[in-house]
Structure formats: C-alpha cells, structure tokens
Length: 258
Image (cartoon, rainbow, N blue to C red; front, side):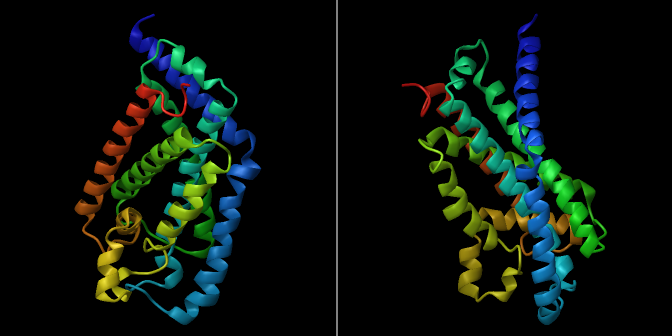
C-alpha cells in the first residue's frame, strides 16, 4: 500500500466515523435546526415580517432565508468538530491518531470533512423547511454552493481550534455562546447594514460573518451589501489562516500531548 493509499484509507475512516456519529443521534444533531428555522419563519418571517415590509426589494421572509440557512450551516459545522474532537481528547483515543504514521493534514481534513457533511445535511433539511414558507429562485448556483462549502469549512476549522484548547465540556460552549452567536445575529442575517447609522456600518465590516451572509444572499437573491469578490477574498484568507494554525497546533501537540 502506497503512502497516498494509506492516507486515503485514514481519511475515509475518520470521515465515516464523523458522519455515522451525527447521523446516529439525528434527533440531537439535525432535527433541532429544522424546528428552530420553522420558528424563525413563523415569528420573524410572518408575524414580524408583515410589519417590517419589503427589504432590498424582497419580502422580509424571503430576505432572511439566506441568513437563516447559512446560520444553521455555521452552527452545525462548528458544533460537529468541536464536540467530536474534544470527545476524542476526553476519551484519550486521539493519541492513537497522533502516533499513527499519518500526516497531520489527513487528521484535520477528516474532522473538517465531517463538519462539512453535517452542515450540508442540516442545510438541505433547513432548505426544505424554508421552501414551505418561501418560494425562492436561486440566482447563481455556483456562488451559492461555493459560499456554502467554504463557510462550512471555515467554521469546522474554528470548531477544531476550540476543541484543541478546551479543557472541559463547558469550554466547548463558551465560543459558540459568547462569540459565534452574537457575530451571527449581528452579521446581517435579519437586516441590511444600510439600515444602520454610518458609524455602525463601518463597525459591522469587522464582522467576518457579514461577508459570508451577504455573499450567500447574492447567490440566492442577487443582492449584497458587500462586493462579492471582497467577501470571497476574506473567506479564503480566513480558511488559509485557520488551516495553518490548526496544523501548527497538531504538530506541537497543544492541548493534546502532556
């Protein structure tokens, strides 16, 4: 067996483990996003949306679809990796991966691919729910799919880094609660930043999720508050930075080796 064949087998094994893990407990990993999205549409899309009126030329319930969909992808891609990798640390079987004759990028790719898979499955389910409340026509499938995948990859990497530094199960909930959730809600999911005063528009530009939501909204609705090329550039730079940082953490054994 060649080195590449060995790496491919290892990648498929880690990936399959990750997929089977979240599918086995689908009531906890997939169903809640569908229920939450339905509630968002009922409360914000219909009850509140009718009072808000159109936004950027679209009915409010249609305007929030891209943000809600991407929010579910972000949450689940992140949660899958952070919970799984920390569990491997807690159960002490991550050491078996580290002593195996595998490059670190294979280990990282397996976990990230698992996070992307969960984000994709949840994204499909949430899309089905959204279509019950909204009738959308995707403007650019290429942009939509690319933003979808890149966002899932980015936050899967973020979940990996959180898991590396976590020392308890409580630690894996700190970032989602106090960082990820506020950034998501302030990332243009429910509004256009043009509604904000000029100062807060500039402040919003420091939020990376704003670029992802707007690029995704451009792919679905054809409108964006941010130049799409700029959004893609920022997403790719963040992915590169987090990938290099994650590989460095694995190489040094931060949070793993004692």
